[in-house]
Image 1 (cartoon, one colour):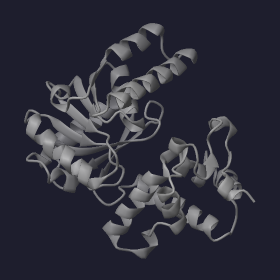
Image 2: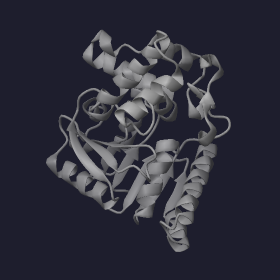
Image 3: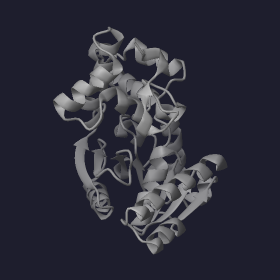
Image 4: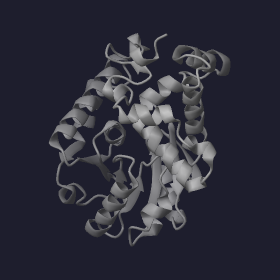
Amino acid sequence: MKNVAVIGAGTMGNGIAHTFAQFGYKVSLIDVAQASLDKGMATITKNLNRQLSKEKISESEKNTTLANITTFTDVNAGVKGVDLVVEAATENVDLKLKIFKNLDEITDSHVILASNTSSISITKIAAATTRPDKVIGMHFMNPVPVMKLVEIIRGYSTSDEVTNLIMETSKKLSKVPVEVNDYPGFVANRILMPMINEAIITLHEGVAGVEEIDTVMKLGMAHPMGPLQLADFIGLDVCLAIMEVLQDGFGNPKYAPCPLLVNMVMAGKKGIKTGEGFYSWNHGTKDLIVADNFKK
């Protein structure tokens, strides 16, 4: 399995494409917008240059990685001849169902269809296809070229053969795959997102400020970054979408997203991607300051 297509050139998609290409796979990076592809390739180049400056790769390896990626705005052309498709589109269930239904129709029957979804049911996604045994979750962590974990999510009908193949493929990417079953939020976000949501509730109720909450978790719990900073990094819209999946999946009020999170997303304050969330990111991640709305 050496030919891979990645659907979506955003943060996760370009990171997944970068990683596969760096380990010798021929990658078709597909997005409906040429501007998104251009931005994605610029990000890949910047990240490769960072690896080069740290002497983690050579100039030759950088050039080979870039040469292994071909961009497409036409999904039919992009998936031609591939063995694996990894979908990394927006975390929206209707969009993902539409994508997988289309992929099922236009790819060869042997092709494995994987989703990078962080919370949406693989079983539900697989039901949109005629090959549920070949549908699986590959939940990479951000930033993909750096983070070792890949959650491998088995849908109800995912075959042992496909699961084993994707586990081995992940290892070939120098990742550590962990097999989990298909329940809302899987493992990573079932645990992480309620913690982030509780941190937002703590801020909303005035228990402490942004920096205070993050400092407690960093120094008291040995987290590398606080939950509010991490929420900005993930994207507040993504956090909200995952909380809604958890609430819908479990029907438990403890998973209800904090009203502050809902309002911030509606106001366009989504974290790094918009320049402001709980912190202001206009001056770069090294000089983050508490956003105006949360200054004392």
